[in-house]
Image 1 (cartoon, one colour):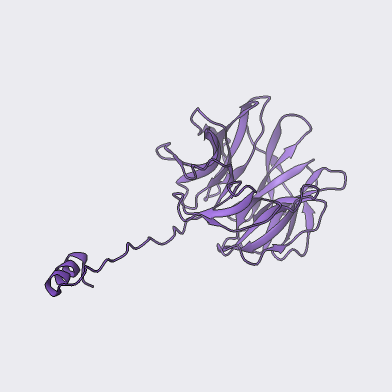
Image 2 (cartoon, helix red, strand yellow; image 1 turned 45 degrees about the vertical axis):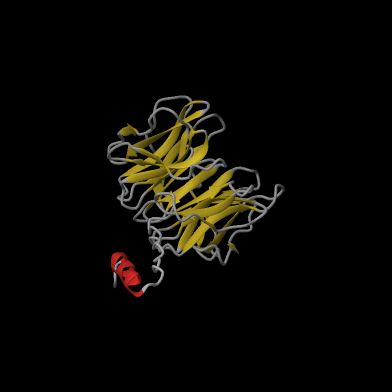
Length: 299
C-alpha cells in the first residue's frame, strides 16, 4: 500500500489535489469495563475500554440500572433494574451491545447478579418477604431459582470464585458493620474472612483475584471514607491498597491480575479509577461531572 509521502508526490506530478487518508481509529480494547453512570440524567449501563475510551451506552430506561456483571464468554451482561421509584429491583440480562434486554426475576426484590464461571448459573441477592436478604442461584435463563447460605443471616452480594467452587458474600447483622464470608457453591462450609480491626467495618464491594488466592474488598475506617484492602485466603494476611485522598469502593479485578478498577470520589464526584498493583499508580478513566459507579471488568 502506498504511503502518504508517495501519494503526495504523485499528486504534485499529475497536478491534482493531494489525496487525504483519514486516520484509522484503533479497535476497541478487548479488556472492556462495564459500569453504571448518571451522565444522561438517569442511571444507565455503559461499557468502555480499559483506558476509558470507546464509551457505549447500553441501556435507556426511565428506571435505575446498576451492578453490571459480564458473562464468562463476554457475550452478555446481567444487571439489576429498578423500573420505577415504587418498584423493587429485579435482575435482567442483555447482549453485550445492549440488545435483547430480558427480565429474569420476579421476586420481592433481586440485585447484585454474578455469573458462574461456566456461564450456566447466576447468583444474586433476593429480598425476602420479611425484608431480610438471602443469596439465591438460578439458571442463566431465570429458571430453577433456589436459596443457598441459609446458615447466615441477611446474606447478600454473592461473587463466584474463578474456579466456580466457592462464593464470597457479606452479611449484615443490624449495626454499622458487616462481615465477609466464603462458602462452597452449594452453601456449605461457611467461613468468616479476616478483616481490619475496627468498629466501622463496612465492605462496599469486593472481588476475587483471577487465581482465586485473594479477595479485594472495601472497608470504612471512618463514616464517610472507604479504603481498598486485600485478604489472602490461605494465610489471612491483610494488605492495604488505597492511597489517601478519596473514598474508594466497588472494586473489580482485571483478568490479567495487574489492575483493579473501582469507583472513587477523589477527583470530586464519583469516577471510575484503576490502580496498578505493581506501581500503585492511579488512573481516572471517566473524568465525568456526573456519577460513574460499579465497574465490572470483562474476563
